[in-house]
Length: 319
Ligand SMILES: NC(=O)c1ccc[n+]([C@@H]2O[C@H](COP(=O)([O-])OP(=O)(O)OC[C@H]3O[C@@H](n4cnc5c(N)ncnc54)[C@H](OP(=O)(O)O)[C@@H]3O)[C@@H](O)[C@H]2O)c1
Image (cartoon, rainbow, N blue to C red; front, side):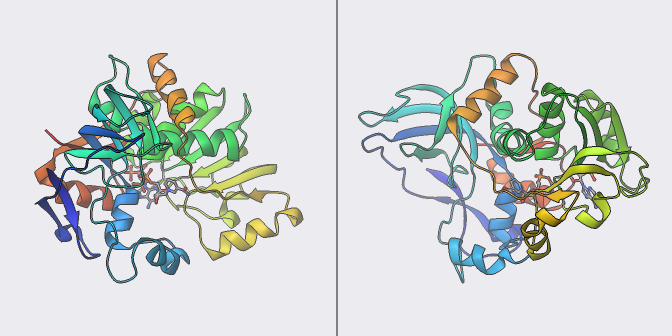
């Protein structure tokens, strides 16, 4: 089968198309013919060993010190189960899911207990592949980490990115009042996704917004507690997706603060992905595919993701 492989850390040029062996499903495993898979910021970070802040050595220890241990990237996928071992959760049919790599290939082996769910007829492969990475992060961070309540006022930084586009819609579905920031060309998208207020970060300073929020959700790494506290009400939360030593120390001293930092690492539970699919089916959540590429254009897809200016998700088509 064809796969996009990388043998060294580096720029998009380390990626190439290669023939590798097609895996075979053992007991409980599912073989998915991949139709589309997102190229995410996690794929860029793994390819370039661009682990944020103090996580550099941790990332290399986990994923390969000198060169990557797993040569095939890709976590959020959509396709069809074409073969399954005995006792597999889904024996056949259209699916989507989120795995720790290897989805940028014609076929993907999904192990028991990995995150995979059935894909309803009305959800196309590209849209489905655009759902898990941003959707799971946004859902878990807003519902479980921030414990967002109806009527809460939320400021979402990086509102047009893969996590941000999902966060705007999920926060609205949870009954929050949403202000979102992106650059001028993406402000109409923020409004379409449901933001009551869409602001250009090149024209507006977070600290100078002159209003109060219950939550500042920073999906880009655009702000920090010192700035966010200027627009947070007492008891408000600053939740950054990217964090370093400073935020870790701040979170440890939360008890001393009127405005707190909450940190978390995203999870990948099938029941959460089911919830996102149900929201999509109910018309509450629209996957945003900013651009899709053929498999042979993987380098261009990675370059766009690394620019940090993609709209929603960037998707690779395996056909
Ligand atoms: N902690 C965790 O478990 C976790 C989970 C998921 C993701 N993450 C991390 O969270 C980040 C989110 O990734 P993503 O794919 O959603 O989006 P991204 O590509 O990193 O960011 C895109 C968004 O940021 C905006 N942006 C770009 N430059 C900016 C600037 N200088 N100031 C303010 N905003 C700016 C973009 O708007 P314009 O295009 O309009 O400029 C767009 O809305 C990644 O770094 C990822 O590694 C962490």
